[in-house]
Length: 144
Image (cartoon, rainbow, N blue to C red; front, side, top):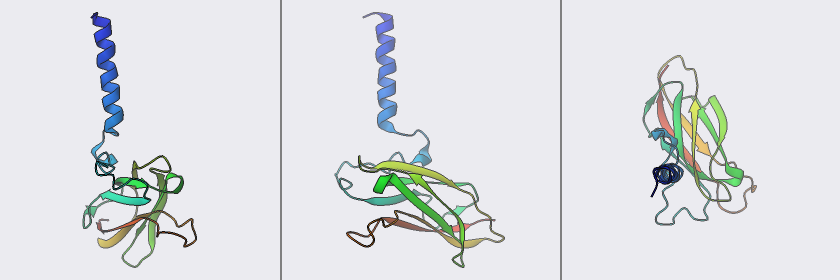
């Protein structure tokens, strides 16, 4: 085999490996969508994997997980101790084609350290029909 053919095969293997491994950043939820047992097949869900419950976080913290939602939309909001919304937004995850990793960054401002809650969920587009939409609620210690 020629040297050029070996280079082509090696570069193809690297591309294939990168595609099957998903994002290379550890926070990007690469392992969150493991489905060796088939439990995630055909189900709608939102699973936030990081940060973990009880983590001490500062503004700019990263969130990652896996989801399969209507049109791939994952909604999130960060609530202060008093229930007020400190930050909110949406990101994309898996949809009709299957589950996929999601990741986003949360910027917020608080005057003092406090317990807050990060809610990561799918909005109920069925108006109460069918199963309740997926939701993860993480209690976090919010640092100023």
